[in-house]
Amino acid sequence: MSKETNRLLGHADEADGIEEYDNPLPDWWVGLFWFTIVWAVGYGLWYHVIAHRSEVKQLQDEMAAAAVRWPAPSPVTSSTFTITPDEVTRGADVFAKNCVPCHGADMKGVIGPSLIDDEWIHGGQGAEILHTIANGVLDKGMPPWGTMLPPEQVRDVAAYVITKNSEATGRPISAIMAPPDTAKGAGGADSDSTAGTGGGPGSAGATAPPNGEA
Image 1 (cartoon, one colour):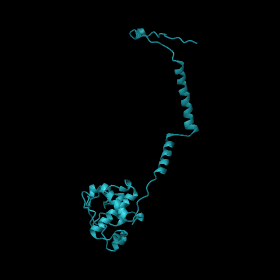
Image 2: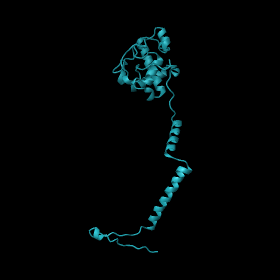
Image 3: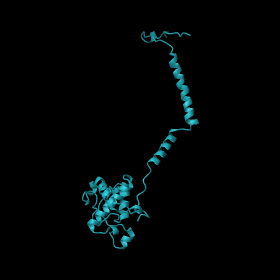
Image 4: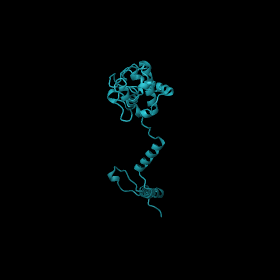
């Protein structure tokens, strides 16, 4: 059946002599238009009703897959903290990349405290130093490096700081690694003495470790 074409709508008097045609749309265009409507309805029913899919569920699935692929690092605790030559070597590199701006390459302190004396802001025992590095002291500029570095790097830089402090002060590493209560009873470094403000991963400015880490 032929379609009427070139039919004028008669708006010339209202549009300064400009005529408007009322031509029918091509069949293929009309068919495609109705197809998209039918497809949208069908897809909506399948997506939400049949397949039970949603953007929220997709996000949850992606987060679960990411947690499996990139598991959260294990917390840094003193129970897994030892000092070996390899850890000290790796810790020197971590210190150079992250701590030098605040504590200086010689570890004598810049805007952060010295790390090679026997004075510590919140404890100079191994568990306390490790806790300080991992959790930081934000009000003194010491960031929580445990949220930015892998646990092994936190332990490495703690091993490096403890080793260098032992070399500078003559305090045995075994004494530094003793639990804080034991060290106080044996006349170890005063964990309540003050030094300066914290900075990079080697800073000693932090709160005492939670129960079970000492």
